Image 1 (cartoon, protein in one colour):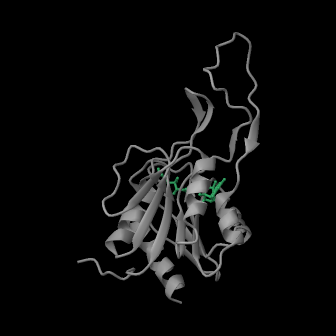
Image 2: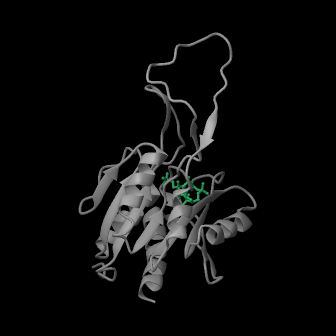
Image 3: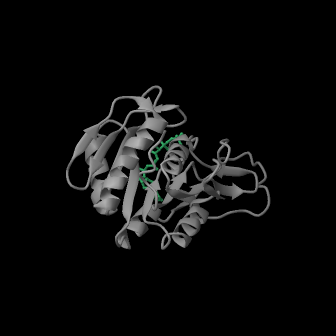
Length: 219
Ligand code: PMT
């Protein structure tokens, strides 16, 4: 039987990719399946937390016992998250938010032209950074998707976004990260602790993250 050790915790989780539309039928996105974020939401629910899951487009069924808010673009995700931020005591941002969106969005389907086409992009707001700027007593957890020398970059994001914990995972390792059932992560904590976890199912990674959320929340 799962212990209800997160009873009383109000947790906001984000999951999945965002879609940044160019026109009604084309968009920029990434391969996030939503599995990591959904695993966090389900594990927290099973441990007694009240969970709101803000989800980009995924093929996953809505988990029972969790309020699911579906969004598409980064701007919609930002609005959904900021709208529930005052309610939340902890936030886990597992979503892969697009850093850019097309500067112009056409209402009509863009015709195909023979010549090459240049796409102008503008930066999306950094949702997690905004949360960090208004952190209060909340527990904030981010993810970092890196290649190679990721450790230093993840640590930089932990500090710049004012997080308690950042979960570093790798873009180019076979069988982990985007889409997979398993993940292999390094947990970097605000207090300097670095925990390297072996490869394990995303649900187990979720429980390890939630153990630390509980520690920060209680303490
Ligand atoms: O969905 P799956 O297929 O299970 O894959 C899981 C995952 C690999 C997508 C997930 O584990 C993961 O790493 N998610 C974050 C990927 C990412 O966008 O990393 P980043 O380094 O670009 O962003 C750092 C943090 O800032 C993330 O918590 C991100 O949610 C957040 N962010 C990023 C950009 C932005 N505009 N706003 C944000 O809030």
